Picture (cartoon, helix red, strand yellow):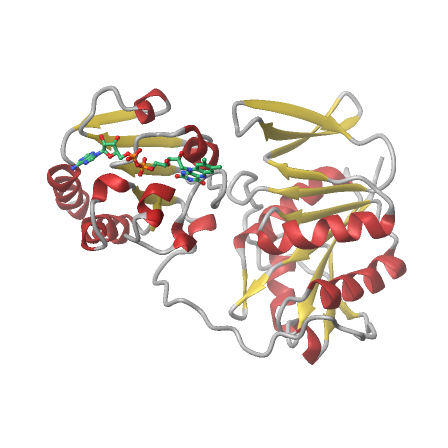
Length: 321
Ligand code: FAD
């Protein structure tokens, strides 16, 4: 059955996050030959519409207002509801990001429909659209079929491959005006921690440090390795609690959930709460001086040794490639 599917494009620092393109690819599957309509919300976002089309969106709708310059739950839901009322989509896909996790349940509640959250795969099977999502902290997977209402899902970043970018694709770009009013939250200023490099949740390579790193300075060899590999640095809660790094780097049950192509765990024991955030990574390498460490149970490759000796050797070898 052909459907009209709305995709929410996520904008950060005037550029589109990769999950926006992954959502288009998921939307194509859900649309089953129907239309994929991308929605961009912000202060001035129409300049990004063409890129959504190049990644496969059939059409783009922008909602622009200076009150939408920063994300607020009220502002974005008013903007999105204006589009939904006009377009009446049969499917919707958002990223399972901080923004998507906040906004999607509000929209689902307003529409009195269900929500499949954190899907890592979507396919057509036996006449149904089937979403796969991890459960029990990634120890099992469930397949979900939506039988009623809007086919609404959030997708975990880095799991669904985007379509190849194609400059010859074309599509309409239009505007919907929404009255943004009665905002209970107004963002006056965004003060960012100076984080360098690649966004952790979208990184293809993550070099993560645990309590075994021993100090803030102990993260330096990990940063160097991450730089050589074009990746990001992450951490266990043990390292964050010990004040070796900022909590924004925490991976796990109460931190970020990541699925990079390569996860290098350094001096991390592999507590169940940490595994919940990284065990679905495509290739896991563990470096730990304790051969009995739990992290080796999920690792594809294990190096038993002192991380301060092993990491510089790896960095030197990767530099040669
Ligand atoms: P440790 O368990 O102390 O492990 C350090 C490891 O480093 C050891 O295996 C040791 O052998 C190794 N090591 C030491 N020196 C070296 C060296 N020189 N070279 C190589 N290896 C070395 N944790 C998370 O990570 N993320 C979460 O989101 C999270 N959420 C939690 C939620 C709850 C409700 C609770 C109760 C706990 C949560 N935790 C979380 C904490 C979790 O249980 C562990 O305490 C934590 O993950 C341990 O961090 P770690 O592996 O860095 O430290």
